[in-house]
Length: 219
Ligand SMILES: *Cc1c(COP(=O)(O)O)cnc(C)c1O
Image (cartoon, rainbow, N blue to C red; front, side, top):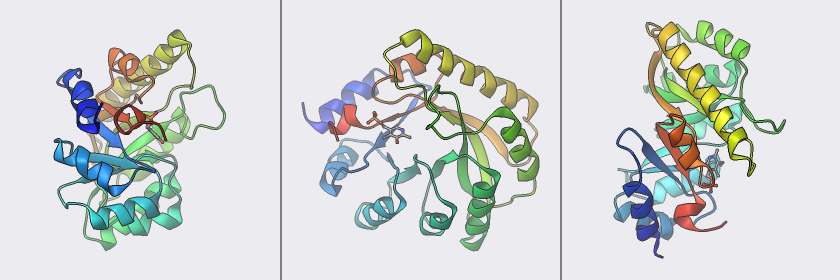
């Protein structure tokens, strides 16, 4: 199947409240262009340098999402153009995004990444870190917190994956309610689900899925 067919098959299966970020990491610019021309405007990458060089070559209508772990010293490169950062996993990183956003006269949208998987290696915060971050974010005029993100355990155990996603959905609903008047929050997105688990994520309340290999093929 062509990349456009892959895209349309997935898009046509999504409920209206779920948006799609096409994860194009390691894939060449001409593949991204093909998917863009098939109607996809949101693309995600996990390496700042790779995203920045692709961004310079591709149409300005593309909205770029940072999905992988982000080092503070790289924020300055994506701050001029990034649409949404899915991987805020510390107060220190958020402070740097705020600083660079203000330098660029922008308000940068961010998602707070929560640790929901069993694996130690997956990045993300626990609830205590989340609360401290939210308290400290009140005065950050360069950022807008648009929701939460999480990655489930990489496992065939669908019950485990579903319970991790469902736990994150509960957290999202709870914090959206409790922090509805937080001056830097606008709780729109719950980013969860990748090629291998997005149907489960949608079942459990995802509003934004990040799909790479199911569109672009294996990496
Ligand atoms: C690579 C990546 C994806 C997409 O993974 P696929 O399995 O190719 O769909 C989604 N989210 C993050 C954070 C990623 O790094």
